[in-house]
Image (cartoon, rainbow, N blue to C red):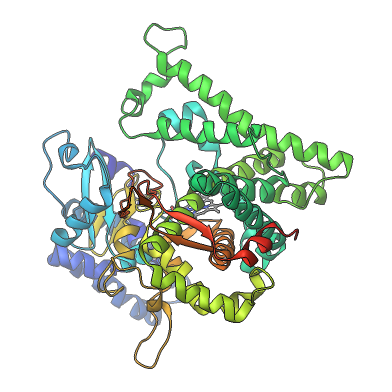
Length: 559
Ligand code: HEM
């Protein structure tokens, strides 16, 4: 209550054009009798203007405006006392809904709450309000249309503040630095046409992927991971990874693993008691401080190593075209610009690596489970591309089924099921609910992608849902939801889409994917989702073999 009163600039109720519920209706809803004086004041304003002389008019207008201003403050603060958070399960005194919070796959519990409490529901955990959105409409209304309010990120003491991940885009507070990172990303990878300059790198790395799979098909998931790292390091820093023990890939894998540990909910007491971050490193029991120092070191190595590499390549004139070299070649950077460039490039690396791995693994799982979809896509590729070459980006527009299959991969297995929480930068009133400053808003993307009102039989893998036919209009493109919302929407959306498309199309062209047979038994894979901000399909087995001799020669041919 005290927090609301302190940070409640009530005047914004009246002047914020993004509010869905007009202030008067809102006031009427909570306290009808309070609305009257306010309405009268507005109505009577024109009659003042007609009756009075110029000076008297301006004095009167000032008085009326001052009165209105005052009334709004008073009425607004009264009204907010009557407004409540969106509905949700009732919590306990002090700790709130701690015991209701799921330990894993929180998107399933959130979706159940949505069934009971509606598209916008809430819980409070140790005083922290969480607003859960269970429909894409609600997410667009709040996070897209009111993005000036809902674009901050939570403050994480261990991972963000102490280790330093708050300097990467995903945890960067909303503000000037955030806007600079986003501007840089936008100019380099923010549109499908900007991403085109990286098509040759994408195609090259996808070919290398095919070769790795051909030589060691049993290590499929390691190849998927290596390729994701290779693609993004090439694009961000023009760096070509080594086939084994690449130092940058290793350090990045270590840093991202430490990120997961550092940001795991409940992992560190300092996240609950922020004052602990001031405990000196030498203090007995302050293991978390020493761990934070060690992890911070790894993070800095991940950020500085590839950046130093690009700079050396620029000096020697051998730098490949990349996100970093494009900026560096424009001008000499001052300290702050250099900081922005290297941390935004590292943000892209950490944002890209694990997400595309998850999408590619679900592609292989989907084809293992749905050979009919694989055969349709292969027939399409065979007829359009022919047997003499591999598919390229130029073929995409002529491969509608393959394209629909990629869309279905994004929808069927939700890579980032609950996105990353958005944080309200100020108080808001949304659809009659009070959303306090600091509330975390969580879009349940998994639910949006499996909403039976939007996607028919949502648990089926069915690329046809995205194709137009006589008796079917295509279902909505999942890219509109799977990459998040508002000013925090994934900056890698076009790059991710390009990477996943080309790897899928090339793999379909040359490999058959099927269920494994062990000791005469068919191994039936199950589509399960791992818990975590980035969810992967549960490990599964599949068999990948070249479709023909011709496929082998295509894979081995030099580009
Ligand atoms: C299948 C692939 C991917 C999916 C499904 C995905 C999804 C997402 C989602 C849901 C968010 C949170 C958006 C929000 O808070 O509303 C996000 C953020 C982010 N993604 Fe991606 N992403 C993918 C690939 C990539 C790639 C390839 C890159 C880099 C090139 C990238 C970089 C980032 C960054 C830096 C953020 C943080 C943005 C911010 O906080 O402002 N992602 N992504």
